[in-house]
Length: 237
Image 1 (cartoon, rainbow, N blue to C red):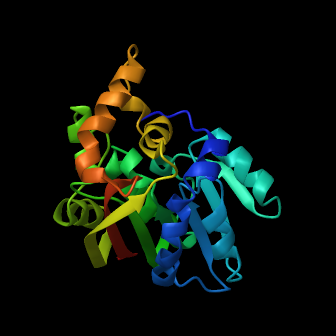
Image 2: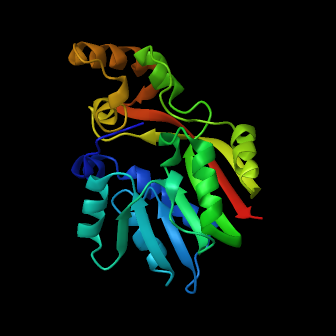
């Protein structure tokens, strides 16, 4: 799925993306002598957290705009525009880390195979992204199908194992996520749901979505996204 990202909006109103990803770093447990790839690094905040461990880390993203902002945020770190489905590494990395990115990649088998090739034998893959049922209430309110890749544990484990990655931990869990401000749902669509917006009549569409979603997703004047996350740890066999 191609998306034109707005790094300024991402950092201003959607910092929850990387803030929620911080505890995923505990599962990664980076070490100072390791070479690690942060796949789908966005504007670089978690890449910087990994670098604080002393590990040699490279942040990659398919969006040139996001990489440009990451370089501005952390000029001392290495960031590159790359496609996770076609990584140039061959048994070079100790770990591949990815937060809130892989649900944008429909070619999951290509991505998994690319990640497996990049890892050293015994290297680890740690990721979290949208899982089965993610934002279903939002999709229902929009009367839309799912344009993302939100797999179940079983489906994603099969993808990883077919690429030579052994799953050692997996969890699918609800994470209702507070959105920014009284227009939080509109900001969410602007940042993440552009594929659902009609070419014409956007204002009417968003008003209708708000009305339909409010009973389930608006509490105390605050909007929440009905996130369900798939968290997984695997190792290269």
